[in-house]
Amino acid sequence: MGPESLISKVHIVELSQDLGQLSGAQSVDRALALLGLVGQHPGGATLTDLVGRSGLNKATVRRLLLALIRAGLVEQSDDSRLYHLGEEAYILGLRAAARHGLVKQAMEVLVHLARDTGDVAFVSVRRGFSAVCLHREEGGYPVRTYALMPGAQHPLGVGAGALAMLSALPDDEVEAVLEANAALLAEKYPNLPPEAIRAHVAQARADGYALNPGLIFADSWGLGMALRRPDGSLAGALSLAAVESRMRQPRRDELVAKLRTGAAAIEKRLAQPSGARPAYQERREK
Image 1 (spheres, one colour):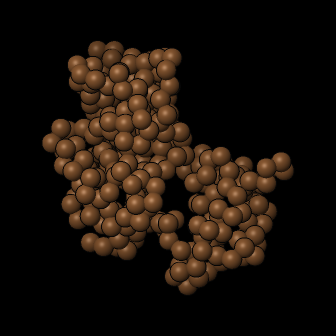
Image 2 (cartoon, rainbow, N blue to C red):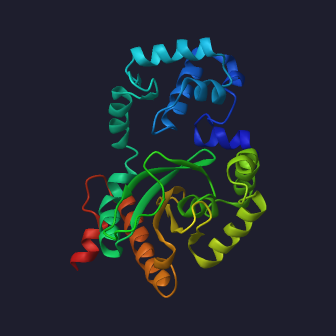
């Protein structure tokens, strides 16, 4: 299965594509893909960033941004002139959460993991060839790790949660993801070429969890486990991050056990009818 068929399979337009090459070159396609590019910059996107990433000329990008601003989907800061997702985008996200509410299903587990371990707990989802952090729950340990923030996006395989999700895919999809991300990996993650990620995938499958031993930020380690829906499809990933000294053995095995319990609870919750009682609460009260 090639990258093109994978894009169709997950029903999105991969935002690393040149928007000028989108099928039909329709304005609505370009505007929506540009909206996605704005969303990839939690701190705000410059016009130069958007022109460079989109493959469109400056005049076209400005015209599309003005249309998105009129719709309330994008805002521009008066001071910095950076572009941000607008209020309407936030409202749409809240409405979508009722159907695609992994954060809601995982929140009790995230809070418990962060409080129990003192470390940072995350839930992430797959988006095309990338992983997107949906929520970060801070623990009580005073030394913070340079880990994911909500909205941050990494190629699948880069980071504990992203590696856990990649490891949960069949081999043909793993190869398609690595092929699609090869240029991005070479540019932004030179210490994580496809052959290294393949080795990490094999190790994660053997261990039953993904380990990031400070490969993105020094002294920022992570553990991740894939989350599956009742039909076996990939729902996302649950992960923990901490400084290196807190991820050494024997504590690592303790964290893996807690992570596994939390992942099982979320999967049980995903299998329950909407409105049912959280599975993690049921287990803790027994």
